[in-house]
Structure formats: C-alpha cells, structure tokens
Image (cartoon, rainbow, N blue to C red; front, side, top):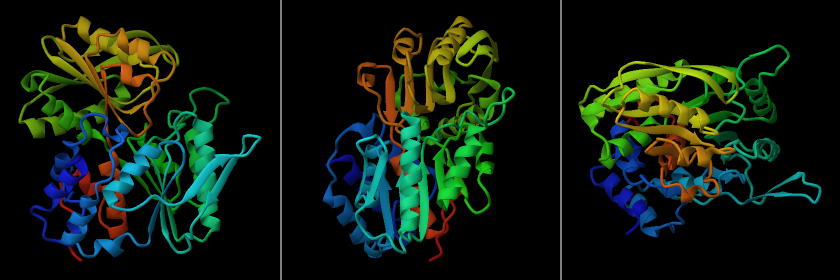
Length: 397
C-alpha cells in the first residue's frame, strides 16, 4: 500500500463535509500528510494507486465533477512535481507538448481544448532560467489565445527574485520585469513558495493576485520527528538580517509544535562581492545547542557552509539547515560535502540535480500536497492564508 493510499485513509477517517476533500482544514491537517513525505518523495517513481481515487469518490461524490473544469499543465522545468500534484488531486496532466525547433526556439502545442477552462501551469523558473521562463511565457500566451477562462501559474521557485532592487547604478530590477512579462502574456494568478522577498508580490498589478506560500511546515515535521536533535536544546538561526522574519516564523511554529522555548540567533555578514563574504559575526547564544539555519534558498552553498562554520566555532554541538529552494549551483556539492553541516533539508520546488543522490547530507521533501491543497482552495474560493494561520477552512457550501 503506497503513501498516497495511506494519505486517503487518514483524510477520510473523520471527514464529514465536502470541504474536506484533501483533508487540510488547518495546518495540523497539513502536518499529518507531510509525515508521508520525509525523504525525497517527489523523485521516487511511485505508481498512482487507483484506490486513492476510489477513496476520494466514495466519500466525496462531488469530486468527479469538482475538477471537471480544471486542467493542469506542466512545462519541462519540474514535470515530476506536476505529476505528483495531479496524482494527489486525482486528475491527469493536460495534453501538451513543449519541445524545441531545429534552431532551438521553444515549440508549444496544446493538444486538447481549453476553451472556458480553469488552467494551472506548473513551471518553476529555475536552471536553465531563461529556457524555463520562455516556456512559461509561451505556454500562458498559447493558452490565452486558446480562450482559457483563467490561467493560474504555479511558479514554486521564482527566478530572478534576487534582483528585486537596484543595488548599483544602471542595473535592472529583473524581478519586476519578469512580473511585467507574465502580466503582459495574460496570467490571472501567480502561486509561488517562499519568494526571496515579499515585495515581489507588489510588482504585479491588482489584476494579478500573488499567493506566496510558506514551506516551513514541511521542514518542521521533519526536524521534530527525525529524532536526531534535542528539541529542548535547539536554536533557530537566520543567516542574515533579511531572513530574521522567516527564521522567527519557523521558531514560533517549532515552539508551538514541540512545547519548547527554543531561542533565535542571527548572523551578520559583510559581502565583498556576490557569493563572497568578508566577515561573519553571530548575535545570540548557540553554545551547547543544536542550531538549525533557516533560509529561502541554497545556491552555491558557500555562504551557508561558512555560516555553519561560524556557528560551530561559537560552541554549537551540531548544525543543520533548511532552505525551501535547493538550487545547488557551481561547486555546491563539494562545499556541502566538506562542511560541518550534519543535514541539509530542501524541497522539490526545483528538480533534483545530477549527483545529488550521492550526497547523504541532503534530504528533499515534497511541496506537492501544499500546492494541491492551494489549487483546491482557489477553485473552492476558500482562504489560502488560513493554511498558515491555524484557522480552519470555510465550511459553508
């Protein structure tokens, strides 16, 4: 019996309302499902168990028709994630072909009618960034010209997000320019996970709402349940001043779930150039504690590994890290392999990199349940924010 069937069993054991189709009435329900996705589930080729769909339909008769007007498409950026979302929702991926012409231009073909449909396109703009971005733009444009009713794009990782402001004269604000491109081709909604900076939501006009989901709960369950750290002797560390709010949110959830009172620390760093740190200082107490570094992404991992080294030098007994997006560019794997980090947890917002399976320190968790529940709530016109506020979904029919 695979994980998806067990997921169905758990959800419907106590369900009595149609609004519990995915069983995530609150953050607590989300946690139950994430327990099934502790180790790189998105990258295991798990066959879809038909019993899951039977479980859905036996308990919720309306499900057969609920997603009848929804079509889920995927580009080439992270097809595994899109496939997992489709399996959770009990639907098939839309029939489309994203390929290349002989000269390298992107070729798009939608092989089914989308007139009047609510469309969801899964396409993180990760490496190769420009290829994946162009695929996304042309997919949306093609769907708009084919008379789709609504086009919602799921961009779990939003490329160019670090270029969110002018850091020097005569440089672009690329995050805003990407937003303008997406608006121009006809996007109706953007769903992303842990944007590098919250103001990216404001780069889109009022016509295009942006749902910035939080992946904290995914890692929270992993760290609490793995049993390798002393929960009563843990400190949460932000790797820089800009990430303090993110680390503090994780700290609050950690304390709420464990009943502990773990503290917060922060690293202050001075950069010589992008990816090069001149000096690191630590604010907070880590001596004798297990530190968990919380960040939004890991690129070359150079800064992360130096941060872990600094924390260790201040007397921490162990250092782990969680980052939503595991980009692992350049020399990242060697940096991680030679670092003092005991464990690095990321999610599958971006696809697994070649050679990653050889790094025992890296664990990937799945965000597919979170994205599937978000799709359901958007279609049901229920609050998405309630997923992270410990509030139940609206149960009115």
